[in-house]
Image 1 (cartoon, one colour):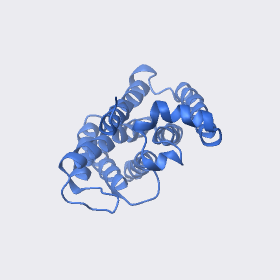
Image 2 (image 1 turned 90 degrees about the vertical axis):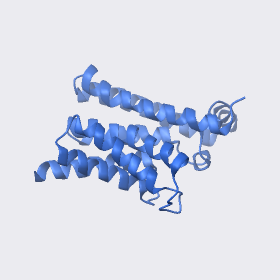
Image 3 (image 1 turned 135 degrees about the vertical axis):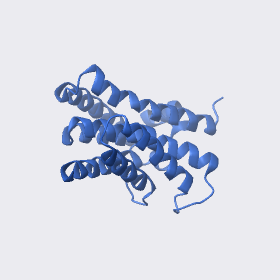
Image 4 (image 1 turned 30 degrees about the horizontal axis):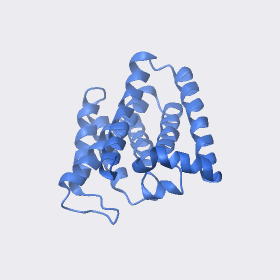
Length: 196
């Protein structure tokens, strides 16, 4: 039997596996925006159809919760799942940002948000928000994103993007982290890129 804790660990493992998307975008399709958007939009339409069916059809909803229920957060029972928000934000990033910024923004979500949750839950002592976000989790988000970014971006862009990702993850906005982290970090990196 899978416990709620194991469900959360599995959820974070899936979340971290999102790193394969920007790596595939860069190395498999060589930043081909058309192919990537075709695949993402197809997956997004499928995800939205599943979301609509699970919200409107009790039988489908029960089957969905039997399969994925242990991985869901409370708010996801009555809202889109974080996976759908992730597909929305990744599609927006690929469509709206230059390839290297989209690559980094999506990677910052995969690495930074995962580290924030894992470190924050395990070691988070200093709570910074009512949502239970901790200083330790936010620092882990920043550090993971910044170290990753240093391999691919100018240092000032990596720093500003990682800082934006950490602040977006911490911010008490009503948007899902999977939506706000890559989009906000991408906008900040784009602005800094134009400024330098």
